[in-house]
Length: 362
Image (cartoon, rainbow, N blue to C red):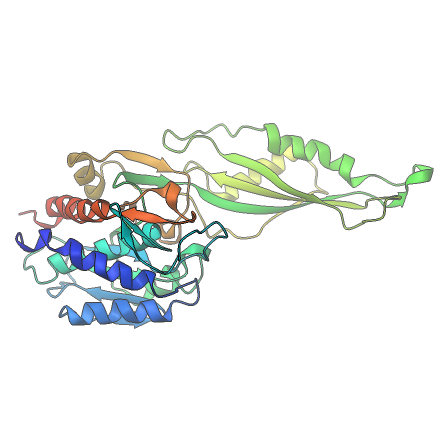
């Protein structure tokens, strides 16, 4: 194994170029799923497929041992209008590999695949390994990792591959979008009739603007609330609006459940006529303990724990997960997206350096 780990980078880069050249928007990942399936098969692995999710277990899988999942996604967003290069032409220029999905999260996807191959035939590992290239991450779709996990052996923990500059994203904000309706009473504006729902909404907006949740996270900071949309059903200039609807973006730290957030907001607004309805409670906040073996191994190789403001498939799994991968989050979804070739090389070596401490325990 020692001789091989320095040769994986060229194969990983070639695979990433093939994936970039194959469009794989969320819900349209059939072709890239086939590429991942074929790549595993060509390397002597017996892969499995569920919808557009591809997975495989190490050769000496032992149900009596705990299992680590190595996961990243192969779907992409659509290229934005600012591209000056062909988003599907995986050119390498001045050490950068360009192309849609190169950074988010192709570099992690191909690096983890080759890390999995590195350990695939190894006997007597302390943990089993499962590799999974999953779909629909960019839309938090229900046919991605959430649909795959029930088909896998029991997972004890995971590395979720996302661009973190190989630092340790140990916590991640949750996202809850709220639809808020503040009632009023319709009336004619000229006669001063009715109860203006917009005015009724002002103290509600004030709560979202100014209320500070008491528990702040060392990793993620305080809960953040932002009113992003205000509208009324009435569009006539001379009618007092009978309702005012707000959309609120709430970024939740790991100190609160969504139920606790809703309970506290209702208490602060203190108006039974105001309704607050979450659109979804799937994108929950998450954290992995700093003394978890994966995190301790990452710290030992010089990586630093931090709290991530962005969401990932880490939010959709129930087991402890460490988000970590080559590339940089700021490049994600950007025009002329790229990843440094050297980041892939170093990423593979650093993943192996971390996992050696966990998998090769005696």
